[in-house]
Length: 500
Image 1 (tube, rainbow, N blue to C red):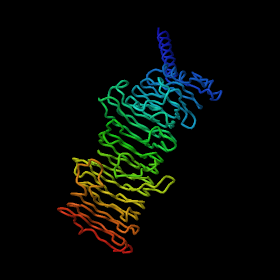
Image 2 (image 1 turned 135 degrees about the horizontal axis):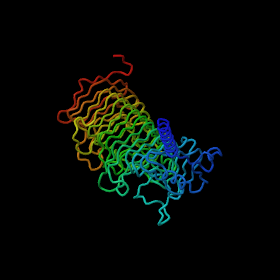
Image 3 (image 1 turned 30 degrees about the vertical axis):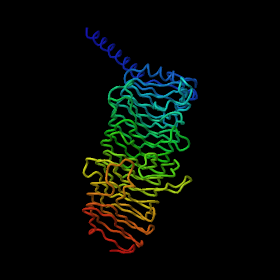
Image 4 (image 1 turned 90 degrees about the horizontal axis):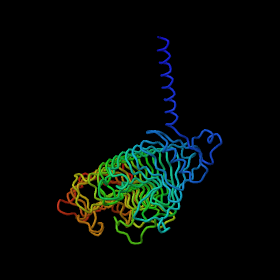
């Protein structure tokens, strides 16, 4: 009796082991590229021939159990159609230098189900056309080589490029016809868009409901030369986090934007921005678009910024803007904004394009009422060797600027920094009085290139402190003070070589 029981138990355990092994094998399927090695093809579950390779990849994805992984071999997969992973699936390559997905004939990689992971490959898209007219895609429809429609997605170690026939390389899109709930919890880690004819990373929303995209994370990502050598439209940026969508709980850490046609890091004017935080991000040499001949500060027809921040609750911590054409940091209508330990250098760089007519390192404008008090806090920020105004504050109230360092700006019209302004300097349709009001500004300024280092104009109830080191003809000029005026008792003006 006992041997029989032991035998039955042994058979049952053996069957369980066989079933477990089968489950493991099915949970990971391998697809070999047509140009992969013979060994890779021998070990693969599916083998491509270099034509319509999306068919084999999609078949492998369809054969997976929930939570399974399709592993792509080394080599190039030529995809003339789209790929859409199932919910919970992982599509994994051998790294962006080893595995490439090249899309043509309107092919894309679409994440339209939840909990999808993409990891370790390169994507390229080109030649997109409107199928009904055989012309470039409709500009009102926003598509990406990699489009994320659904929540809880992870995109790791993916690089990409595209020509100017599509709207973005990486697109995060709320489309209620594909995925109606709020689009949230998406992360990009070690992703790069390089030498594109279009936006690198773009957020957008269609429809009128659930248009707030939230809890989005970027870590160690880069957008390089987006739109620099040909562009989908005249507004191509490296990162655009709010095109027609509101954005909330955005985290951008250790990211780089470089050489974009327009801004490096960008938000559009109208969307709501809440709890958006940038940490240790760099934006350099952006604004490659030729500058307009006639320009009013804040003109929405030209961005040219390292960081373009029109309104909202946005925080920048230890961020850098270097050599951007128009602005290092462009800020308008700040409503509880924070800049901490940020550095600007070389705004208004000399380059092959015509120099920008009025480059500004830190541009802070207010054109409509805001509720936050202080509206903006700047602490321990620096402007180094600006080719224009190192700091321009206009139409602003309830600003708190502490320990701002202004070093050797070239200035504009003989002025290194403008603190306040006349009405003609405000953006079009401004509803705010010009100048500065109810604010505190503490700074250390030095430099002799402009005739006047600090031009304080049209101030009301503004307190200044700090030191000005300069041998300029008129280091500090104060004009047109209003009721309440300015308090300059805490501001020292000393010769450039003074050690006091």
